[in-house]
Image (cartoon, rainbow over the protein chains, first blue to last red):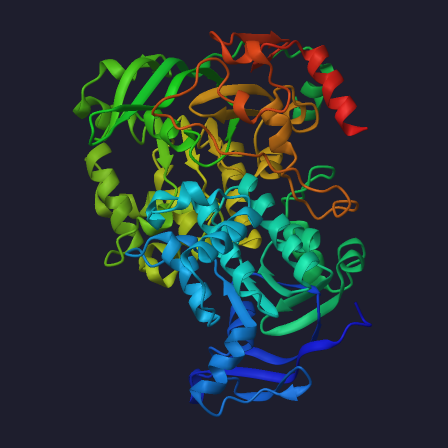
Length: 266
Length: 351
């Protein structure tokens, strides 16, 4: 991964909430460099600042201090136009598929919007072929989804449809904020394989946020372990899981039940 | 005689265990607006011995939560009771009326923790009020002071701070709320605790604290048996003695946790084990196997094996007639093929 270009990097990124006595630092002096085509996992327990960091990367929150560089240039949002341009390159999948959809729109509207967002002028038939292709990518049959409302789908189907959307928009960076925590283990493996496929076929950079080290290990090349707003350990996934150095990483690994080892509950 | 001496003598045979929960041919259905009956639990039979723990696994929509709800004997529309019997500690609860059920069974014999239990706490009430409410129904003779003492005592034994009793639900974290709910629902020492996905909304660190609490309840004999529902198979492996796998409203396999994880017989269980993700060496190399297709619509279930459409070993005769249960030792599975044939196939696939 090291020979690929650095796509998104940050130095001394800080985010504080509140002021005066109630000031609290959610992201504390974080440095990172994400390469093109890399899958990075940010792992930590609830309240460790991983979602705040993701929101800063997405440009939804403004960092209190520090620099973020995108494609080697400082990322600056002078106007809403800048931000919109940035969002063409960065997309997200969220935790709760049930609240990611507009309940009043049919699912084909969601995919049609993607075509519109790209500014493509297509005939009805071309649109149909494009939507079909995107659904086929995530192992869904477009014929079954056509003319349906989101509530008629299962959680796994909804989340896969979100990935179909990403496939159509092909952004440079995808931020996946706990995309598998609300769906069952069986659909989870499908979603993870879809993400790997996206990376392999489109060379997308994926930032995967999770609290489960097992998932992170399975999917990612690089792990960043976050504790209380700080990245305490980062490096290749293999190295960190097999030989964790930091106390917090060791604790996270021991918290996950395994099948070939005893689970220490003491 | 010390405890060790008894163990060393080795002749202390355990007393024959009785079934604390016995379910026979249970069928429950949801009535839709179009007056169709959708059987979410379709002919389920199983028994649970006193002191044992049972895990129920399966995909979403396979009927695990409906089964848990049915065990309570409390049916709200659109859920309806079809047929079958549920025996809890020797009492056939389907013969009781609603009032008897509420006063004699719920909370005392069987307690239930629903999926979103931590959101069930009324945000305007202090935690102690929930316990007072429960005691008012079941132990009307106690004064407020006595209720407080019982609650504080119980919280202390479970390593929860008694200060929690004086706080409002929104002051507690997710894991803490979940543990509080478990402590409240087991305060009457029910025989069986049915926990429906108690940890799926929590992160791994709080998950561990909840599991510890459940283990403590079992060790200290506050509850006798546990029915644990989840789709996280590695978790079931460490928590429960037996695992039962459900598919489309039916039980497809039941066996001890170790057998089910490492030596599953039913093709569906085998595929389910392919979705296990753990942070262990070598995990990255063995790719996950996803099951193609979706579970059948329960409105019109196919005849024969319900998994046949998604099963890679399915043959013509799988889709006809009733599939009998096969018994191998103390395990049960529902498939027309014998264990040797299945194991041969699995071996060939691994090659």
